[in-house]
Length: 246
Image (cartoon, rainbow, N blue to C red):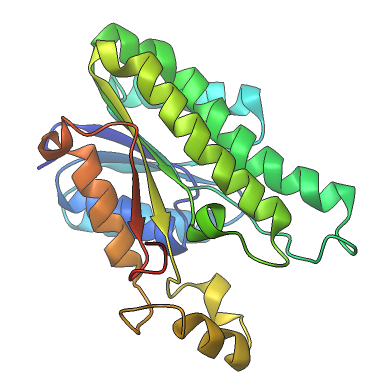
């Protein structure tokens, strides 16, 4: 489905990003595994891809750093010749009630989740324009659509990703480039496993399908949007959340 394509996945060392990288590779894409702090985990993803006959390399870069993102995109094109798919998955949380949230915690989440998405899209803009083709998939969140107490910074960043996605979709549509977002719900990751039992039960009660989602659920949605099967879909937010946001 993605044979011959080149994909850059941010935050791909673990969790949802790891599954996205592995899934895109399974469908034939060459993958750049971006990471910030988890070098060993990122290299493991590369190893797993190569063991199955795929091509990949890991690249350390904080997506909040504009210049570093530019170098990463340049290296992707230098090694693989082009960039067809950009998946903006890299993100952080710094949860707290607003009365306890520091300015530093607010800024850190916005800089990584929102500005980081801008940084990578900005550097992929011209290469994709020259190709007159491309797929950009940004990871938003059900929190960005519904809001959540204690996550004002995270919700703001993920809601911003939605607005950015729709605006970029309008800018790039005439050049054959689609821009969409995937909004995960309650997914089984290290982040959600750290929740208290009471918080987990309360969250499950809000899910009509009454189950936790898997990272594979998200990865398959991303792979679909990255493929030619989704060539007439742009500016959309695909909620993969078991029905939490209807």
